[in-house]
Image (cartoon, rainbow over all chains, first blue to last red; front, top):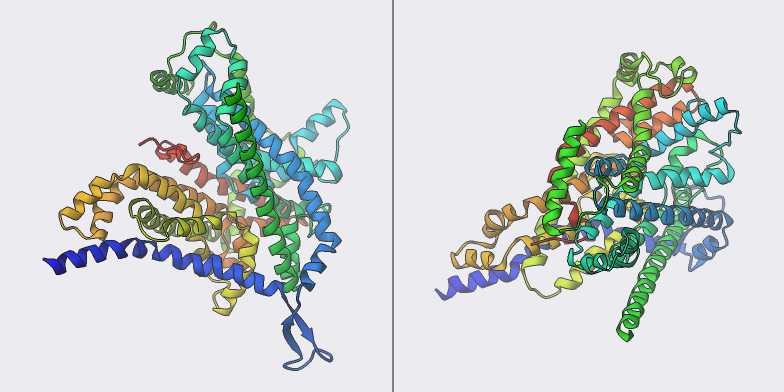
Length: 312
Length: 301
C-alpha cells in the first residue's frame, strides 16, 4: 500500500518533466545551442599567418568587439536598416489600419456577405511569402501587368514600380496584402468578445455607429492592437523573402537590401561567418529592444489612461 | 452561391443575435461596411485571380493579350511543367507535403505534451520554463538559421531532409496555444478522478485529456502546417540539392533562371498557380474546424 502510494506520487512528480522533455531537448538543440554558438562566433575571427597556405595557417582567434565595431561602421548594414525602417513605417500603420477598419466593418450591424469577404481577406495568409512576391512581381512588370495595360490605354504616365521610391510601395504592398487578413481576424475576434451591454447605454443616448466604434470598440480592443503591433514590428524588421524573390525581376534590389539579406550575403556569399554572426546578434538585439520598448510604452500609456479615468 | 452566402450570413448574425440583441436601425443593408469589405476582398483575390488566368496563357499570349483574358495554353503549360527536369516540380510539391505534414504532426505532439504539462501540473520551475520556451518566438530566424546550419554541418546533416525537418518541430507559439487550450478544456477534477482510479499519468493524458484537447490541437497543427509550407529561409540556407527542395525554394530557383529567359515565365506562373491550390483547398475545407479565437488568446471554457 505504502510503496504503491509512494510510486504513484513519484510518478506524478516526475510526470510534468517527462512530458516537457521533448520540448526542452529540442529547445536546447535548436534554439539555445545555436544562439550560444552565434554569440561565440561573433567574438571570433580567422587569423591568417603568412600566405594562408598549408594547415594551421588559418586559425580562429579572439576578435574582441572587432566584428561589432566593423558592423556598426558598415554603411551597407546601416543603409539596409534605414531602408527597412522606411519600409516598416509604411507597412505597419497601413496594414494594421486596414485590419482594424475591416474588423470594425465585419463587426458592424447588417453587413452582407460577411463570411465570404472574411474568408477572402484571410486567404493571402495561406499563400507563401515567396509565391505572394512572385505574383505581385509579375503584376508590377509592365509587359504582363493589367495596371500598365489600363494606364497605357488611358494615356497616363507609367511609373516604374520596381525602382526608387515606388519600390518601397511595391514591397510594402506585398506585406500588407499578406498580413492584413490575419491581423483583421485577431482584432475581429476580440471585438466579438465585447459583451452587448457595453453598447446598450451608448445606443440609448443616441450615439452613431462611428461614435461607438471610436469611443467604445477601439479602446476595448486596444490589447489586441498592441499584440498585433508587437508581432508586426518583429516580422517587419526581419523582412527577407519578399525582396529576395523580387531580386531576379529588378536590378534595384541589391543583395544587401534588408539587414537580413546582408547577413545572408556575408555568411554564404562572401563567407565571413564571424562578421555575419555579429550582425545577426545586433539585429536580434535591436528587434528585442524595439518590440519590448513598444510594449512598455503601450503599457505605460494604458496605465495613465486608466488613472485619468479614475480621476474623472 | 449568393443564396448560400446569405444563408451563412443570416446564421452568423443569428448566433451573434443571442449574444448581442441590438435594436433595429434604419435600412436593411449597412452599405458602407459591405462595400468596404467587398473592396478588401477584391484586393485580396486580385493576384489569385490573375495567376489563375495567366496560367491558361501560352508564352506568346502572356505578353500580347489583355491580362484578364483567359488563354488557350493551360494543358500545354502543365505539360511543359511536367516535362521540366523530368517533373522535378512534383517532387518539390511532395517534399513540401512531407516537411509540412510530418513536421506539423511532430510539432503538435510536442506542443500537446508541453501544453498539457504546463497547464495541469504545479511543479518547480514551471513559469520560468514556459517563459524561456516563449522567448524562442522573438528570435529572428536568421540568428538561428546560420548557427543551425553550421551545427548541422558538424553533424553531417546539412542538405538532408533532417536539416529542414528537425529545427521546425518545436514551435513556441504552438506550446503557448496548447497551454491556453489545455487549461481551458481539461478540468483538473477529471485528471484527479483518473488518479483516484489508479490510472497512470500517461494513460490519463492519452485517454482522458487528449480527446478533450483535440479542437485546440487541430489549430496548432494547421498553424504549424502553414508555417512550414510557407518557410523559405531555412531550406534556402540548409539545402543545395534541388531534389530535396520544398516548393517555395523550387519556385524561387525557377524564377531566378526564368528572369533571363522569358520563355520560363509561363512555367513559373503555372507552377505558382498549382502551388497555391493545395493550401487554399485545405483552408476552405477545414476553416470551420479552425478555432481562430485561439489567436488572440481568447478561449471560452
